[in-house]
Image (cartoon, rainbow, N blue to C red):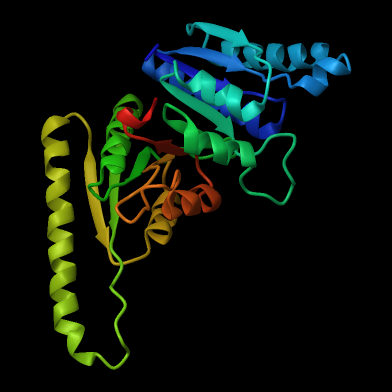
Length: 279
């Protein structure tokens, strides 16, 4: 990793919020910033390079004002937006995007570019919806013990440490579906749930031992993971998830939980993939 945060900018309000979030993150973690505006072929054809340069310059000015000590650079790659941003992610520590760009429909919560890049980038991708009004001092991470959630935990611990924030680890377990006539399964389900709770709590212990400087609390609930993370996000400054969990299909780029959280959580969301998949 090159130790820099890459931010996609296009002049939209969500992109401006992404620049502001990234500048604060760079300041906290001592990272460089690279601001990228993808000037697509149509812009060059109609002589709109001045507009592209203006968008990039304004974003760079905002970033330098918020993080005066950070190394801020800019880039204007050509080609398709998604391909260009995924390419930039290869040498990035993380990438930050607005939830929707100028090309998105007003009613959409998450744009196609944000969703595609979150699924294919070679680094953690943070999707920012707007500027936070209240700081809660808490980072939330979904953790089910899978390889993807291990990567999410690593990123969440680093974020919590840099923010001097509490790390709230959430594990949600759903009851198996049985026939409505299977009344005798009650005690078995209760035992299974208690076993899941103990196993989930035990998985957090090594993280506390390895990171004594980070305040880590864990919460095990019998609930759909998206619903549980949505509730936890109400008092979070950042929600961190793996791109897929234990229930995901191997061929899926983003799992159903990742999709659900990205579409329903209002605070910034970081999607993290295991390092061996970031190639």
